[in-house]
Amino acid sequence: MIYEGTILPLLLYGAPVWIDAVKYTCNRRKYIIVQRMINLRIAKAFRTTSNEALCIVADTPPSYLKLQRQSDVQLKEMQRESNTRNRQGSGIKKLATPGRRSQNPRN
Image (tube, rainbow, N blue to C red; front, side, top):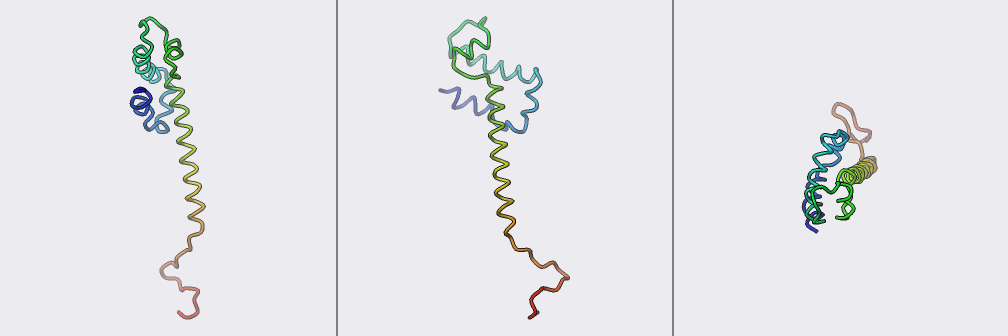
């Protein structure tokens, strides 16, 4: 489906960065308007049909819910990556700082 392949990734791009903005109704309304236009075409329904009914008929969940889920998934992945970097970084040997003598008795 074109919606899931092209439009949805555009809507979800960078979700963890601006997920807090969707809490406001004016920003959420922009998402609903985009999804509504697409759902009207998919369902071939009249424009007086409610957005909730369009989501059900077109079999597309509300975009702000997908946005929340995508944000949660990306944040968990970023946390997992930072945890693995921290674990790998703990095994790095510390270099001698300038001005300090090394522990090696030959020097």
